Length: 207
Image (cartoon, rainbow, N blue to C red):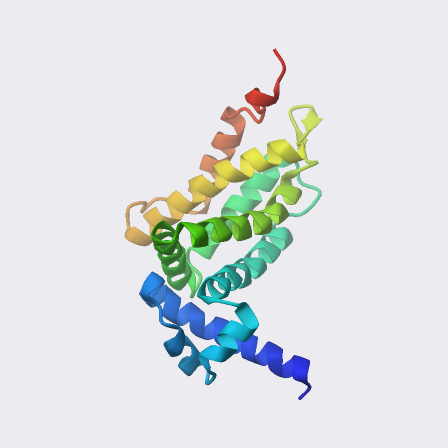
């Protein structure tokens, strides 16, 4: 095994261990337990990630990257905006029934708790999430909508609204508060949001 391969193996082992410990313990997660689970030392964490915050930020990026890659495959390029939002909503709802859905939701809630306890970490997490959401913004930008095409700024506003909608619905599904929220419900709600909302940034429109 080359040095680069060993480094990547150690990185992967630490991220997998961190997922388990951080999902359970949140801001109380201990680096020594994460290192023990990965059969490494805390020194390896500092060497590869710089700090506990660096490890958590890398964990978020590692968790989100395949998620956005799956969305890109689930939403074909030839769809118009409403069709793309429909496909995205259905894909999101199917994710609620995935085997790892509850652990993923647990991680989301835990990360929010960590961000509230550590504003500096919260700012780094927000930057990491926004960088991953660029994939989603690019996915919606350029699609036909009401006789025009969606601009990157409009796609960003849409992404923010859809994230808020789906995060809330997903938590409702997990808690049993949205028993009728099937794929069709997710799709209908997302379409209604897009159809009824203005994608115009009013602050950017000259008077």
